[in-house]
Length: 467
Ligand SMILES: [Zn+2]
Image (cartoon, rainbow, N blue to C red; front, top):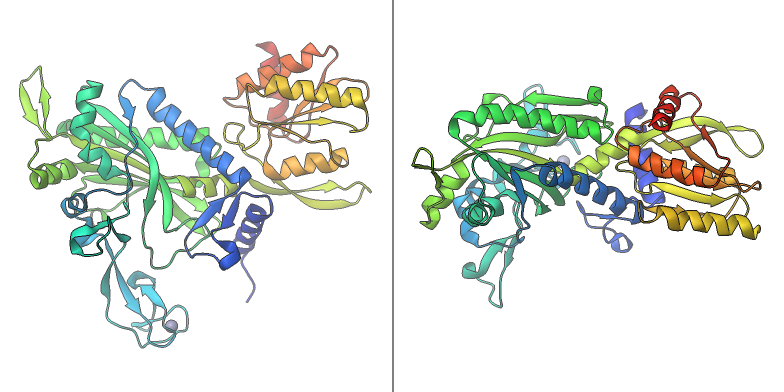
């Protein structure tokens, strides 16, 4: 069977991720661990840039949001009250022929009969509820009294700390609490590279508001989150805000949007924006016996706030960023022969390495000295990579392949040349100004576009010169 172009594209992305050190299989030398992944030197930078930008936009640039960092292990009572212990399950079916364990909704239906998607077998068990939480024991005794779980979402620690955060932050409604952290789900079938993993990271905001304003904030956060994805370089055309139909929403939710992205393996959810009403706080108030009410000083009313939750997957977004950035083009090699090369077109905001600095030749001491001087000048402003090894064309290509947006080459004439590979300079004005100032400080400067067909690059350059 021929592979679809999209499957082929996904294979190339997975292979690039390993070859250039974005993402490795966890415990690879022992054959890996299904559903777990490690981020290499470039992957960790990309992921950090994403998380830092989220934190900046969601916490630092707002007056109405504060952050917190909760523990992964929590009192088991939290998961009883939230409903996770009883209902955080997937219906699961075993295939008696090939022993595969399958999610009931992944069975293939042919002529009204369910079949195993692996082997086509029809000998399947009845669906059973399979809890997705990882169970563990706290302390020395492994019995029922010491059971707890690795958290399946970060949200619950925000709910159970609601009162503490409210008191110390002295916020008034509406206000939010943000958190970035690890969560764990024992997925029956981890798949699509890092998309569905068992250990993953979430970026969640719980935005507390009055009941009558819930639907308005739901729409507000959907729009804000769409803007966020555009600001990290994901084209609006590849993003979709799906209104989750009534019958598919959690029973306590009054409205949910899924923000989806067109991955090579299909349209899949990046983030859920859910109006969770007062369900979680009410549950914890009931179970703990502690008041989680808000006191409105103006109206003298006490009530449990409602909450709107934009909940994004870090690993999914990293994967979307790589898929979005991935492109191939034709360029001549050293002998002038055309060949296909990979270019990652990251937005400068999230690119792992911001600027590469090259002396044209490594055996010309003045060039090397000047290049190292430039590195030292740029380093306080951005993550800089110095490379003096190999032909200059090959060094450029190495940076193209990992999506480095800026580069500075010091050539024989001791002219510093700042260039950028990518067209998109939105929001990176500071970077281009520093680079422009740097190149100007070396006297005669030349800045050119490496991607000659990208018209906007020249326009951006003109705009930044005019400033
Ligand atoms: Zn089977």
